[in-house]
Length: 107
Image (cartoon, rainbow, N blue to C red; front, side, top):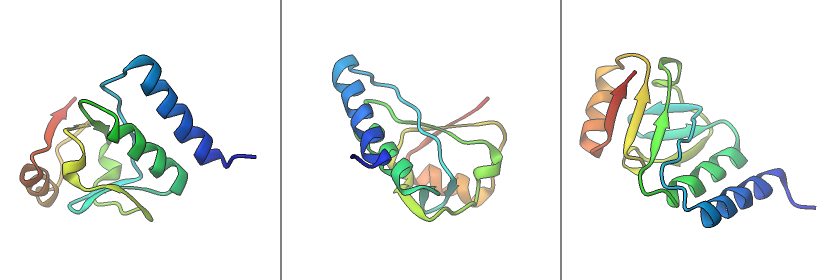
């Protein structure tokens, strides 16, 4: 029997192949100046598959994720194009996102 994370990653790959979806959004356990992280290994793997197959990569993250570090790295800050958030964020993160060329939308 396949591991849950393997099944999830395969579903994402199949979805991308069938639909040609180009604007997925992935969640995160944490976002810090060194990158995007997740608390669950299988979810992080799925998020990487989604990001690797997207024409434009979006990460929605509310302020509770800023500066938070989870155990599994998803990608560096230049691994996605746009951060969508609910509030302004710490200056250190703003600087790191700017250096990575990552855009920010505050909703």
